[in-house]
Image 1: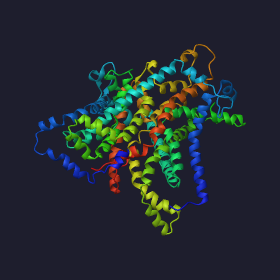
Image 2: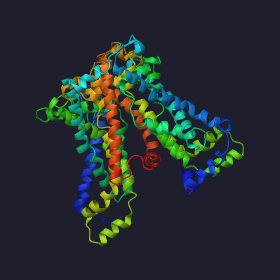
Image 3: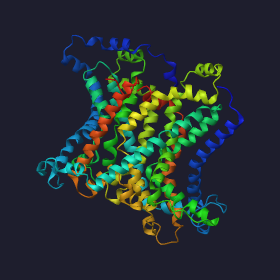
Image 4: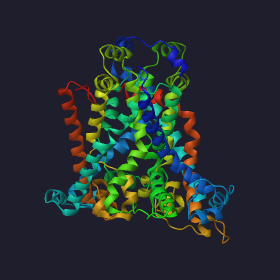
Length: 290
Length: 328
């Protein structure tokens, strides 16, 4: 392509900078307010964009002191860890089995998976099934129903199908069992796609809000997203007892709210850079080529 | 990743297929089962989940024809025929309101939200510096990974009555704006939230397609005297056409599904009238209100209509000579 003229380059620079600023600015506000000292937050009327009076971790200390938020953090970590592990194992084994063409029942099974992509079971029937399985008020209700995404199965299957048949055949001649083929040949060769799908499942579980709201009444089993909804979106005040810090002086509510918000964002920010470079390669194999 | 790129893929899939499937001829089912049971065992857990949570719930739709009572269960609840569907046929005002809101939001999303990533992708693609493009992509993908709760919370903190923006307005002597919880701007708020969350992420597909457009086409058009706008119009956009049609078809299937979590989170603040959509209608009437049968009926009709829309759209795509979602 020819080099664009100056006006066009300026227009593009402004356009892209504006988009990036719209994403970055709110986060700066949230981080700053969660870290600013109480006095500065109060003086600024609730929010601080660029803290000048140093950093104060009081808001984080109070939410991590063992109260409601800490507990929710543990629940969310459990859901995410167990859910992602389960999801990856089930998705990859199913994807592998469907990639072994010519085996008994391969086509009908693949068809079952593909057709399930076309319709949505519906909210009420899904609820009834979870209820019937006795999963109401259990964390498994958040984990199990979504641990095999048909779409992800198709993506890993496409990847496995693309693996060179020669490697698999020669391993089989060397006496490798089906499980060994999957675990020692298929999986290691597909690290990128497994990592990306793992990220999607992980983020999905970490972010799971509606299923938790639907199935979990007991507030001691609330994941972080429900705590966030109650105390930040709906603005219910968190007292010293909820936080587990007794009745000492609390940081301003906005600082506490922003700290909760940060706690729910940080894990995503931590894994994001590592997996980000795999996005295009991993996702598009499945999405574009079908 | 590197290992895979280094390995030669078989040039023709079908050749390898035949090679693998060759032994299938003339062996009994029993022998094949005995040969393949390890593969089948690997498929069992995943298939069970799909059967239990995708297929089995379909049976639950029969409560759309019942006066379902949770304590009686499906087997003992009374059958009422098509009574639950009356609310749809007779045009119950609350239901019609949900339909209206749903369709308006769908229209807004198709007109504003859908083209946005195409524009961003075209601008990004025209950047000559790879590093700069990577940086912008890294930033704008990020909101996609935030939950709706986080997005709604961030919007509240930024635009709310005591939020950052109004704080800034007040400290500079302006009147604060009433944005959060304001019925009149609710649709604009929903739209801007969707744009903020997913525009960046949606560019990923368009960028991938753009990178596959043959450079020679641009050079040829430049030789023919096409300026940058004409190149965009005659080379870039035609290159994007198949993916645009594909995504529009998928969108059509989703056209009765708009912003469920997003709206549930903000419904209290703006009230039912402005915010009720079909999904929230099903939730509020069924799970919260206890009208299980009616909610299931609405949900069932919604699913059937959505399925019909996808199938129809796919047919239309074929008429236009496009691939569509699937062949058949």
